[in-house]
Length: 204
Length: 170
Image 1: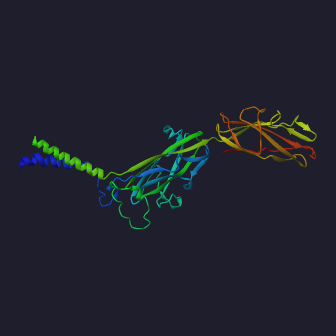
Image 2 (image 1 turned 90 degrees about the horizontal axis):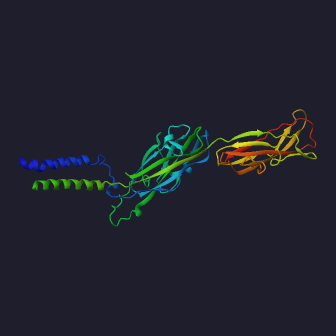
Image 3 (image 1 turned 90 degrees about the vertical axis):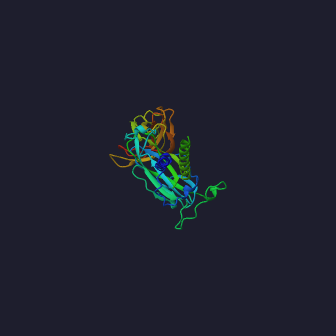
C-alpha cells in the first residue's frame, strides 16, 4: 500500500499541483462570462482611414489646437451584441518631429498631445449618443461596455454557442469609438509631427 | 515499466485537461494603431527692403505712377515663411494720405507685383486678395509695391501714409 502511494499518488498530486499553478486565475468565477463559452470574433474597423490629423495652418508658438468630438477619428467595434467589450487606449504623450521618438523630451521638437475618447453603443455612429472614456494624463484609458447598450433592460439571452451551424453575423452589432484631443504648440521647429495611439479591444 | 506508463498517462491526462480548459477561456481580440499628425509652420515675417521713392516718378499730366513691375522706384518687401507652404495675401488698394503740413489729403491707389524668385521684371501683378501663392524652397516670396495718384486739386504739402499687407497660411 505504501509502495502504491509513493509510486502513483505522489506523482499524481505533484502533477495536479503543477496544473493548478499553471492555470490562470479564475477568481472572477461568480461572473457569468458568456464570451468564455466559445470563440466569438471581434473586429476593430478603421472608419475614418488615414490619420487623426490636426488640420492647419498650425503655427509655431500658436498654442492650443483641437480636433473636436464632432470631427473625431472614428473606429467601429464589430462583435456579438450581447457581449461586453473591453477597450484599452494608449496614446503617445507627445507628437515628435518626423515621428522620431528621440525628440520626445526635446521641447523644441515635440508637441504635448492630450488624447480624448468616447464611445457610442446605441447601434448608430452618432457622437450625440456617445459617452466619454476617461483618459488619464499619460494618455491611457480603459473602458468596458456592451457592444449594444441594454437600454435599462435586463441582459438578453446568451448567444448560441458557436457550433458548426452558427452564424455570428446574425447576432452582430457595431459600437463606435471616437478619438480626438488637443495639442499645445510651443516654439517648435517647423515641420511634420506625429505620434501613435494603440487601441486594443477584447471580449470581457 | 508499468509504473512509468501509468505516470505518463497521468501527466498526459493532466496536460489534456489544462489544454481543454485554456481553449474554453480563449477570447477574441483585435488591435489597431492610429497615427496622430500635425504640420507646424513657422511664423510669417515681412521685411521691407526698400520704400517707394517718388523722386523722378513717371508722370502723365497730373497722374503720377510707379509701376511695380517696371519701375526701379517701387518699394520692395520680402515675405518669409515655411518653404513650399501656400498662403493668401490681402492689401488695401486705396489709402487716403493726410497732408501733414496743411489742409487736404491725397488718395493713393496701390498696385503690387509678386514673384517667388528675386526678379522684378518677371513678377506678376497681384490683386487686392490673392489665395494661391506659395513660398519658394527657401521660404521666401518677393513683393514690389507701386501705385498711382492724381495731383489735380491737391494742396501743396507733405503727405504720409501707411501700406497694410496681410499674409496668412492657407
